[in-house]
Length: 119
Image (cartoon, rainbow, N blue to C red; front, top):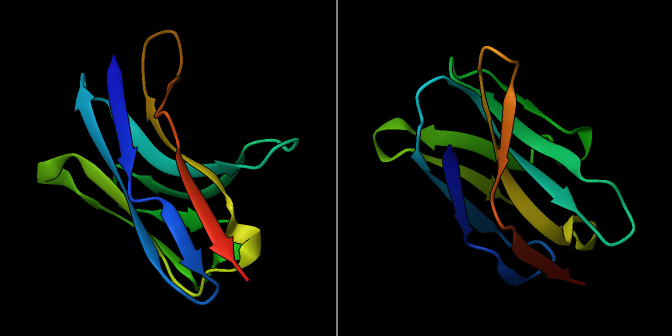
């Protein structure tokens, strides 16, 4: 099992910045990637940014150049630095971890943190 705990959400004005944190605990070995997703009411959860165990990253087109995902391995923490925030970034942000297993990849999710960007 992997437990994920997000923090750092809140209310910010358009153009501002926030940094989300996700602390992972539990059976952390064989985690192959961690990511941030977001979801708004009535819409599917969408990938925002992902970082693999090797350090490769990828981003949704809508956040490229504004958001940065990075990790602190000794602290088992993944961060999402969000700059130049827009009202359309408003969503619940979820931390995700993918762990390999004999039966296939396993997904773990945090409880989510609300980000609200006012215009």
